[in-house]
Image (cartoon, rainbow, N blue to C red):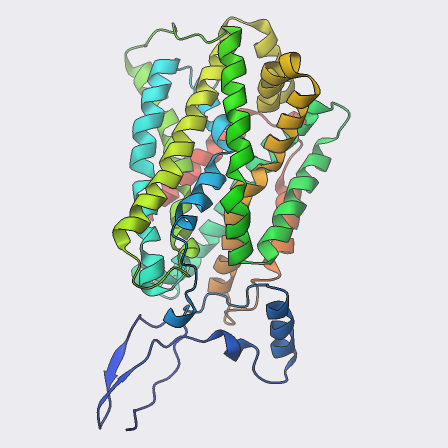
Length: 418
């Protein structure tokens, strides 16, 4: 039986069926992995080398059903668990008091309910990965069109690099709090290079790293919680304000929390495309929900709680003004734990990598949406975005928390439209 030929569409619809003159044919219109390395061209040789060393060879092309071998369902949750159980999330919660003038109770209510709202789009779009085998920006062509999505991809690239720049600044503040002689750029370079190396290997290595990196972070955050509770500096007596000023402050903080929570939506499907095509949409949704909601709420509540100590305690206030978020961790961990406290801070600084890996990996995919050659930029975008991120990141010593809050608001605006 013969079937009619169709023009190859690298991002064609899943399970597309067509009727031939003598019967029914079935094609996913997907490129298999071996096809990337076929031939004697320089590109094919580079693909063979990449495959030999475990580097992802596929770009934004559809992942065929028979190559979706990521059968471990828990990876759907751990990618987001590790990416959000980091000091960056802690910093979001901490902004509520010095920037927006809120107390702990109103901060906590905002954190819980806005995160619940903000992660729902991420959970929803994550279910599209197994179903279609397409990356999020490619899926967005159905909403914005082939050329319209290029504008969205540019926004996504700017948001990813912008977030990564803010994140590495927080990490550099931690390094600076450990050793005041360490220049800010050195901490930025360490985190950026580590992120670049992981992302160059692609989907599988990113998932391997994210599968385990949350464990030391959870242990350290629990230590921070215990040590801070032991100090008795938590101030839960800050009164709930009323009136237009309070409403404006809550709405502004809510926009920031929403921007951070829903910020993953523009690449949600990127991290489920290798899941089996018959994966339950409900299970993908729930694993994504748990991987986002639990770490976001925990770390942001902890950040808001620790920041309440700056109201009445000069040591906490001075530490925050001297070294930002890093100063807060230093005043909680170093006096009671000494060198071990500094070690914990170093681990937290390096944990920024877990937050930046999804950002930078998805930059490579967004660049391919702008290109006419789908696989042209995936391997090279890690070094490129790392260099851009280091160039854009200002000195941690001259950067205040308002820079991060402004970025969160801007990202929240465009993602709300998306």
